Length: 435
Image (tube, rainbow, N blue to C red):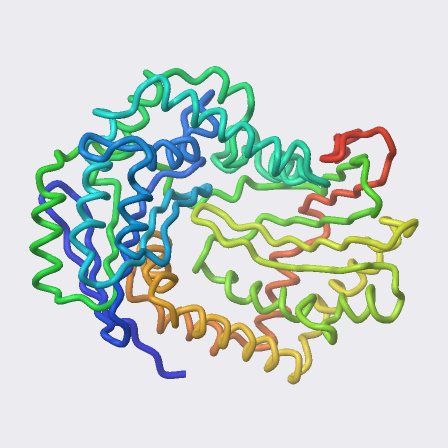
């Protein structure tokens, strides 16, 4: 596959990184802002702050009234507008008609520089309640909802940046005060901790003029204390979590700590996940769902992150089926891959699927702008796309076998067995943890 992603990267005097990507095929422009702060960077006792901040950023700033941010964008005909938070970063993105680029840069610069001129106790309290409701809805009251929390805490030790989930703990959210919010903003929301990608139907000279006009007046902050060094957390044993939940179906989850995004082994594990559980002929689907009919579905994926990734296999079983039996069957399939590479057909199918997904994901300018920011933060190269494609093209079947043998050992992982139990919390409760 021959691909290029032409970009121009430069830095303002206040430290703001700017990346421009021209594409005149459609008359739209995507603006994608990454603040290089995620839940991994939260001070102790402040879990959930990065995500809470994402919500506050939409409520208004010095020159943008309360709840006006989205209204300006709707009037401008924005097709995409939102923000997300994960362990590594917080992003904000809008896609608008090309002539509305000045509006978006004004909106983004006003909240980068002058959010605290607007944010007050009332705004803070209302958004904290929104986040707490989000936690209740997506975690505490959702089937299997707290299982990811138990897994994360078992995979990474207490002092590891990935030990806690991004959503935040109720205790830390309740303890948060407006002074904490101000301190977080001043520490992490400085231009020298952010990157702005502008992609689409742009004139680069005009885009640079607009960036300079709106962002140059924002003062540089002190260097922020963000975690960037790879840290696997060194799980040394197999941990077994026994979880009860008021659900209909048992579930088995296996999770390993794996190399960071774009590090050696990361692409190979993407391909391994495909061989194991993508499509009806994949090894685990065929064995558990089709042949033995003990599972309803099975998924495998490499969740790539900056300091360390996780590889996870999740099988939701049919009613009354044994999690222990499913665990043995999955282990048998993994052992086969440790001892022999996937077949030529399996390898080629996995590679074709991942390459087509990667290339097609770059078609829309909104996703492309976010991918450029991801490449910039995790790979240190906003134009990394051709190298990303090459990772999958050059990985051999023997490389996949080596990845399973070396990176997915039976003795260093977390296994969670979820057993249906009437009267238990729907989200799950951890009954026993053994090592």
